[in-house]
Length: 464
Image 1: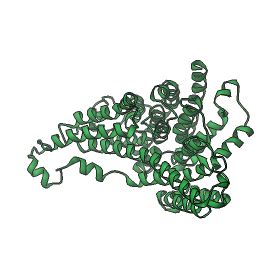
Image 2: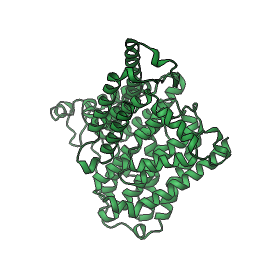
Image 3: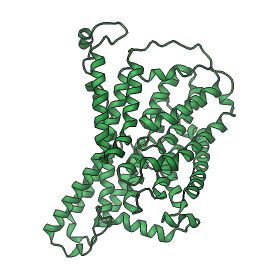
Image 4: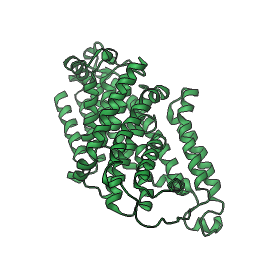
């Protein structure tokens, strides 16, 4: 039965990876895989000899001696446990996405465009790289990529030039998301899963992530694509709302408040995110009842045009397929974890892979394995890879292993345009060719990944 479940998981994995070839949204195989795996567990519960206790993070003793009714009760409890942990992540993401959509409703992100005062291609590259690095740490790398490419389209009219910028924005956004607990889904998973804390995550990964961004951008700045000045006259865009800047700063501050709330109250992050959403939504409702549009019509006329509730409007724009994908893949991985398969695989991995130096004695895994995880995240979605690592390793909170996994999974995906959510959305927005990215940007991302990995190893030895 275990073999059949592994085959189902592998086939589901392949369907997710080949999403663009099969023309099937990845949420479909993820949800199907989840349901089928748990169904097989229910049907074959009496044939399993091992069970993984997620609470104690160890294999249960004498599981095979339990009666059928006791095993089914344990299955239901385990399913509920994993659903609860998964929903913590999903509710957190829903809150963050809604705040971002509320900011966009008031056209708050157009404020960022005012920072770009130059026509020099090289300076624009550095401005957008640092904006991507900082913004992705606050509103996540996917959203930061969407925002910055939208702004870029207003500044750089030539598409052949713009896709170069888009490629480096992907690299910078993924690097920026790695050092923040709210910057990337995988990092958020590690944070909510009590594997890393905000302070230590930033301490360990800020410099490696910065190196991962700066090195490729520095190399690119000497390339012909970023020499000279951009063509065309700059257009003056009138803001759609006078409250745009206010909502931008309020929304970003609300998201940054979440880690502080968790540190002070020790409550799960989604509680703080719901509080932040409530505050932002309150101001959004107040401002929407004021004179809102550039036509200066009052709220009664605005209501007739669908502007009555910015919160309802923002909730309707939430990307639910992504939420359902995370539900499916996390619960599918949880099924394999519950049978102890991931735990056993981790033990085999630790015994078979050579250690890469004495510094790794405390991490219980070689640097090579973690870096391979980063390379793998470029080919396979990084969410299931990190989800698998949560079930594979039992290192304590803030062990350097978790920080290196956060860095590798977050930045490794930049090597292929399909390797990260930021890359996929940029590919769609600018119609970037897979092989163009591989040839022009992939090697820069690889150099940045290796440079950042070396910087992490140095940081770990200093902080040890």
